[in-house]
Image 1 (cartoon, rainbow, N blue to C red):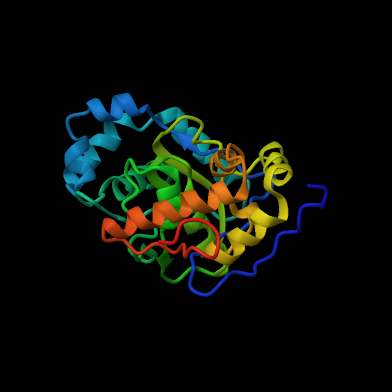
Image 2 (cartoon, rainbow, N blue to C red; image 1 turned 90 degrees about the vertical axis):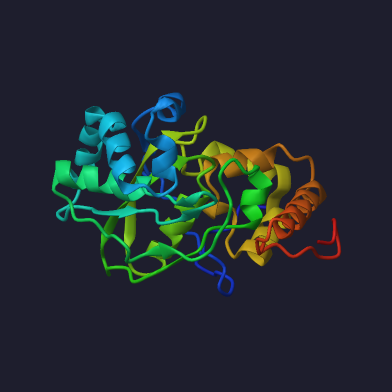
Length: 273
């Protein structure tokens, strides 16, 4: 492809979860512990299934003071302390109590305000251990009032390819707020590098170009600049746009079989879901 990449815009489609471009300064997600340490903790399963007391024990034991110190630096960059916003989501096993407990722990240590229950996820997506293309076609959507001019720091239990956090960022930033950073208890490999990097974006553009830009805007309501770095890297591995379209269509079929409502609708090319 020889065309120059398009400039980012806020032209989002319908009620699809909005995404906003990543600014060059956006920091890596602050991570507190490893997946292995989390999985071995006696309170993890109960916390993931909605036990608030177990979640408090888990984050108390695994939350790193050094990571909290990193978060403190974000407050020093602005006149107003960030608002901690935990991701509120319903998992297959029940309500995930970890993000809320995690935000409360950080809030106590840094004396920051918590937005609890004001902004919530509105759909069930079944992302836990799901494959990447299944995550693409069932994006998390959020609703709730955003404080105008508010500086938010997002809190979740885990960052994988980063789509849920990117969608929550999009909801906030298209509603008058700003996301300055993110923190999670754990990460999948390279998950902390959530912002789409210049090298990944250029590679993605050279590989698939405006055709992918158009497909993503038509189906998901945002362009390439809204992708996370891992999402972009995964799409770079596909040999053609038709291959991407087919994988999305197949993922949509699988999502419907699981009782989910995918946003992807196959067109003339690819598998018809």
